[in-house]
Length: 633
Ligand code: C2E
Ligand code: CA
Ligand code: CA
Image 1: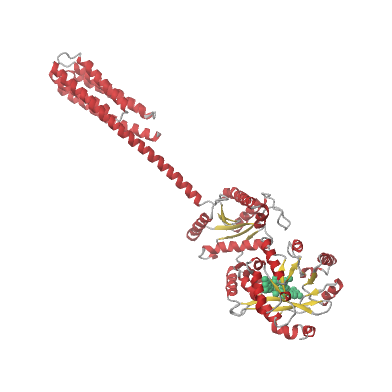
Image 2: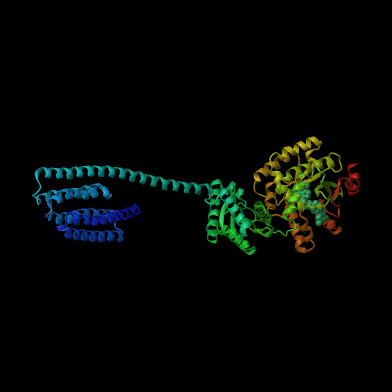
């Protein structure tokens, strides 16, 4: 409104100058028509013009409202009329003046039509002109009656007519003004709504940080700038540790609250550093920032990790010795070898995150292109895994598990072997993690079970076989059903089969795992706890599941050379025995190890000393010579 006022004043000022110039020019008419008094009228004209323009300029200068400029116009019209009329009336050339005085109506017109005065002011001004005119008639006795009548009629009709037009114009102007006001209001409302919509469509509904859509856009922008201007940036993936566990135990509302708190602490910490935070999915966040190099990325990751730890949000359902909510952080940043694809950097950050999770969580990992397993290698492995079964790239080897008291081979452990298309062998340490990440382990795992059943159990090579099973398999739907189908098809009894589950298994989603294990046990399948002592959840697993056998990790056997190590091993054995479970010790590599087994009264042993993992053909002939005598083959 203020802006409109200023514009109006400027407008009025322009018209005002024009009107006064015309007023001054009429001095020429004075000189021609009433020369005897023209001196006075012209002087009066100049005096009025100077005074009026000065006033108007002051009004403009002090930025007074349009009311003041209107008032200046109105007063000037009246004074200008007087300034002309009074000296002009003194003329001796009366015949001419009679006609000249009709021009007085011009002042009325300018009040009503020329200046955009508001209605009441313009009517008051033209009425004042009318009154002055009537008054002046008393001082001009020379006018005859009918002349008087004509001029009065003319003035009156001019007054009525111009006032009417003015009224109409004002009404029109008012409507236009209202419409403009309404339009302006609507425009600003629409702008506000548009901005709000834009904000909403880019915001995560729960945490208020950027949503996936906004993150993707930002990523594309950063990527383009990296490609065109070489501006490096980092993508940092942040995943809340054991979040599912948190949700299950504390409830979804608390889970939401946890995410909100994590998001806001990240936002508050990173905003001043010019980094953006977005929610990338479930409990995963992504931080994007321009960076100058490796050190800065690492520093950012550490800021992220410690900010969340610093929240001290209680999470006593995790059993890894920590009791607060933490995050695992995986990062990657643009390098000359980043390649032409944006997905790659996210892929690398994802891999780094996976490694952070695998390394015990609450830690940071930066993608390392110099890792022996570079992304390209992993992609090759993933591709090999997809066609492994069909192209005979995968097979099982079997390692004997011996009863240390009787010397009999009681079972064999099935271990997977994979070779690349060119024949290069890959160790399980290389391909099992990739198979787990890509989900290939689901089919491969079932293949391994079927293979062990067919090769070993259905043919009676060994009375029992154990197969390693990943957590992902236990969590997958229909796993127990698929296993029962295999048993049925191969004609093998469930009690001949054991599944080895490593205790490092993810504790999240435990309820699915428990259900699956119960179903498997109902099929008669034994569940063995593998690598006992290496993970963090071993003891709680022992408490939760009725395992059949516990395999103590070979690192304990190696440590047993020292007295402290031996004491430790004895403690572990006692603990497992107290729970009434069978014990199997892995990694027997020497005769001393076997001797130790006898000393400790261990029933089952496995290791290179007793037999290396071997393909099925070798197993039959030479690996387990005792087997033939025991099983009567
Ligand atoms: P694991 O289940 O602990 O398997 C035992 C590993 O120790 C095998 O390595 C075996 O070759 C090795 N080993 C056996 N005796 C000795 C010994 O006396 N000394 C030493 N130093 N090592 C011995 P491998 O075959 O490389 O397997 C490594 C891991 O890969 C396995 O550990 C298991 O966790 C995983 N894995 C292997 N096959 C499968 C599979 O079919 N499915 C799944 N999910 N995982 C598998
Ligand atoms: Ca095993
Ligand atoms: Ca093991």
